[in-house]
Image 1 (cartoon, rainbow, N blue to C red):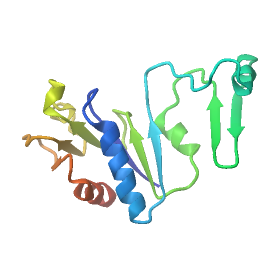
Image 2 (tube, rainbow, N blue to C red; image 1 turned 90 degrees about the vertical axis):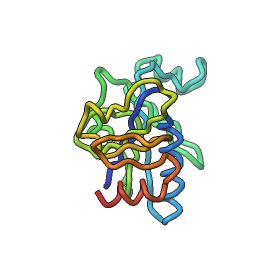
Image 3 (tube, helix red, strand yellow; image 1 turned 60 degrees about the vertical axis):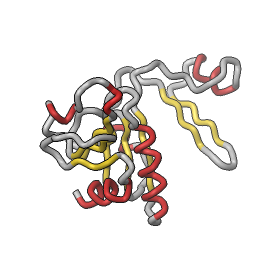
Length: 158
């Protein structure tokens, strides 16, 4: 399973890049899964629903199953490392992991000049490439944010 990390500053285009890569890679017949890391406290449930009540009662895991979809919620005592989250996924060809800024996995930075902050890759040589909206001199390969096929080819061949 190949892991492609998408990182960057807030509003840099990470989600748009991830979405476009998913569409491109699945269009090539690959099975793609995604992971999204957030530092916000997230609750996907509406208070009062059955699964919310199960979780509030103390269930360690709650799975909601319909004819079309499964959702698993699990209470964590500490943040789960990327490797632990990956181990929970079903087999696939590629995982696009948005938001894990550090780690040994291949990471591509999305960067827009409007962010105001310099690209992360200028201070972190372990970032494999930069996808940006303007030409930027960096030590890594640089792609235009719209060059999805080129970014996908780079990520899959690295």
